[in-house]
Image 1: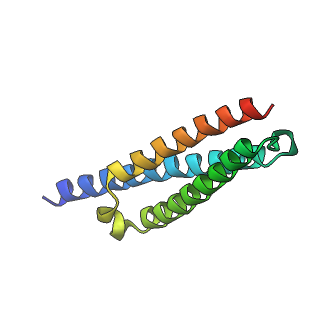
Image 2: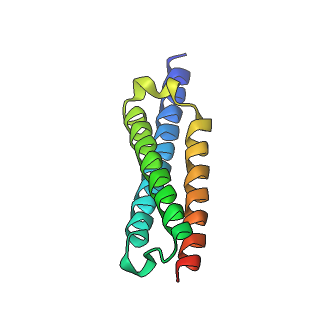
Length: 110
């Protein structure tokens, strides 16, 4: 019984590590995209592009805050029960959507 409990605990620790690495990589990637987006190369030339840029910046900031909150929860193993796998996957999906939106904006801004 003790061995089974120890195995399940180590499996949970591996899951936490895996999720934490995914979120950290996503966070770093979003920060890099934000830096590229704020480059003078992609300054908005029209009011529509300006609105799109402001919307993207807001979405990036909200996602960064969500990522940081989730990383804090994952680093505290006691709270892992509160952080379902689905929440991690949702944030990764949102990061991919923002990445696509940034790419579309960069194409329009050039």
